[in-house]
Length: 282
Image 1 (cartoon, rainbow, N blue to C red):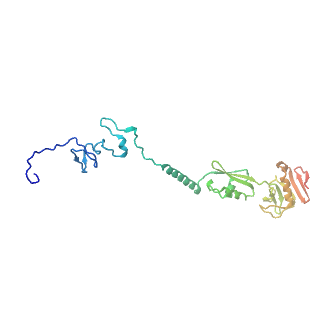
Image 2: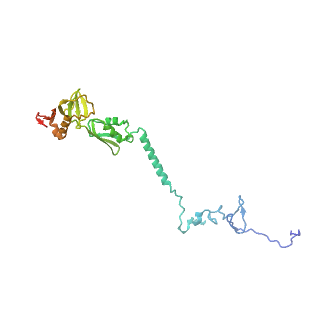
């Protein structure tokens, strides 16, 4: 029928399908020919990316250098010596590891500092009378010993108040040892008191009091009797200071030879050796 509703009497040409028709993905110009829509309403052919690995165009940017298998048993390859893309890197991964390790060490240090966990030992050197128990009592240290909970400076200060200690030094020794180096007060002389005898060190400080003479290695200062003295008192009587000054001027072997110093005469001090020989000191 034509536009005038009259029958067409001309020749009729049959339309034959083109079996070689191909179609590209949607949005691209496809060649003419036969095609069939898929279930999404798109034109689909044997060369469509959905049906065959040999697509007309790469699906992704990094596929541009890749040659697909040709169907003859040859594997695909990267043209121009290309390599497959590397997985994405994480430039900040090492920072996270550093933070995790640092956080773990900090947590461990806090646990050791707070909890009663054994951590280290204490040793005492240079003293026969001051023991580890004395050091712990002076520093208010409890078992188990934890070096992180000990203040070395405060421990030194408290040990200085011990009358048996002349000087002390607290140091840390590897691997985990707190070493207390003690220099003891050495008894220099013994003087009679109102209630017994007082032992003096080289500086005239009372380091021991008893009803009898306990340390026979100390020189006896005779000719004087002190009143009621207490531990820690410093005797500043001139004649006693003179006797101590004389003893301090001697060597260790020389002091052992002096058994007594008589200070009864203020103007004339007399020292007696262990053999009974008098020495007039003036």
